[in-house]
Amino acid sequence: MDQGRAVLWPLHLARLTTSAQILGLPLPDRLPSHLDVVAAASGVAGVAAVRLTADSAGIRLAARPVPPAGDGWRVCAGPHGRVLHALLAHKTTARAEHEAAAAHACLRECQEALWVDPTGRLTEGTITNLFIYRRGRVLTPAATCGLLPGIARGRLLAAGRLAGQPVEEAEVYPADLAAADEAFVTNAVRGAIPILAWEGMPLRRGTLWQAAVRVIFAGGG
Picture 1 (tube, rainbow, N blue to C red):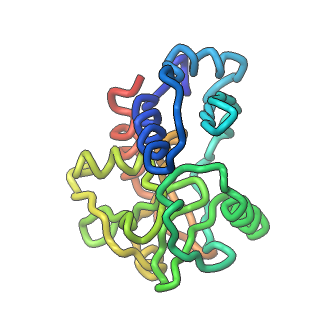
Picture 2 (tube, rainbow, N blue to C red):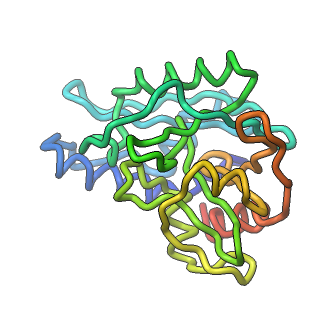
């Protein structure tokens, strides 16, 4: 939410509706509109994140300010491996594992932690999806690895190319990230954030993340 625009809101509603159908959660006939989101964020200065929660008690909107991302983020591995399960593909309130990983990252003076699955593949961050640029391709961990396919991630995959480079799903390992020409993480609030370091090792801060922001928010409103 920025400058009175609920960017990408229809896509968030579509994801909510799909997940509710799969999980058997009833939704009201009327879902929050763009104007409802603007009203919820009216008391927040600058960029706001508006959270839509749907449960047995109904639907609620809550807004919070989004702190600046700075020049980029330092990223580490999560505190433990993560096992694949069906709920990973849905945005739910079951976030204790993510919150523990975020706290682990903070202790390591990082801004994000990336999960590694039992086979050693990188999957996602606690609030982000991962992209790396290597050997002329922009790669993001495949949904089959066990992750929430974020709105921003979906926008980049749907575009198919980023600054002329193909955008594809792939199996991404820690060694791929360490050897990347550039890497960034995405979410629908901030767009894209460059990764400055992985596990303490500096990474090159390129410009593809800036192109990613433009693609993610193109036509948003």
